[in-house]
Length: 412
Image 1 (cartoon, helix red, strand yellow):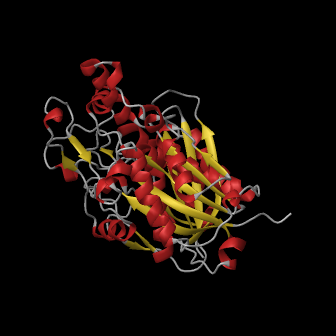
Image 2 (tube, helix red, strand yellow; image 1 turned 45 degrees about the vertical axis):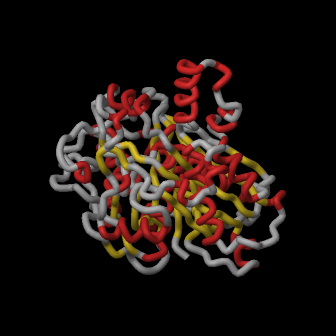
């Protein structure tokens, strides 16, 4: 039986670089950083005060009354999804809601709603807790918000796998289309965790960078001076369709989703398997799902968060799977510019991966001044042209709990 081909027809994002796809892509190619120092009074006592704040406040786009009924993570999701919907040419199109679904992730959910309402409980008593707190803080709130927005009745799915969540939502959405359960899926991830508690928690577990100095230089994947990631916020969205459905309506196609692989390390709740075995299996599964060999991979948007152990493990994974071909693959980490969006990271990086294929250029990794000799990869430090012809690009995501997701996109 011929397998249903799944294509990307719409892109949307809001993140520390820009509030839309065009601005984000321009900033990435220019090698600009979206990282800054928190100036809010509540951050004064934090050990780490460097973050990637969203470049555009969602309340500048979403009507004020509606925004108040959504956690910040759902606000980001809605802003990015509305852009992707427009980009896919779906505004005003009469769709069958039973054939339209959502797969949308958040690694933490509505954490700011939860913590703010707990503060209200302590200060003002239980009667002042918002009656909307639960539907705002639940992890599936972004997916539910988009389902309501677009009338998507095929499914409203929420994979939660920490920093792999956004990429896993794309893999899950592809499965829904291949299984014949939907013609169109709105897929992606979001996160809004710039708050003193999660920032203190990440800092105390030694996950965040404590590098002093210019905040724009702190996120430095693969550099010998790296010491942790920088927390970012925002969302990324892909509109996925069966190729048949997309071509029938004359949609513009950015790329094809060739395959995906999902595995678990079963090694440690926070640290990756130092040998990268679980991630290697995810990449192999993505290639097997796509029924292609490693020689088609021309580009990798790596998970590479700027942590000492994780960056090395990912290099080992790529060598293990791509073999001698790894030297021909252009690798980048856009987290060097955006910071780490946790549950939204894989989705934002999927947007960048699709654009790299579409425009045949890899965005750079910035702040790579002294490449770790244990990471033997061809890392782009300036925009690099990608080959012509049929090529593929890999988007990797790995999360706490040992979650590994690899999604392989192909040129069209």
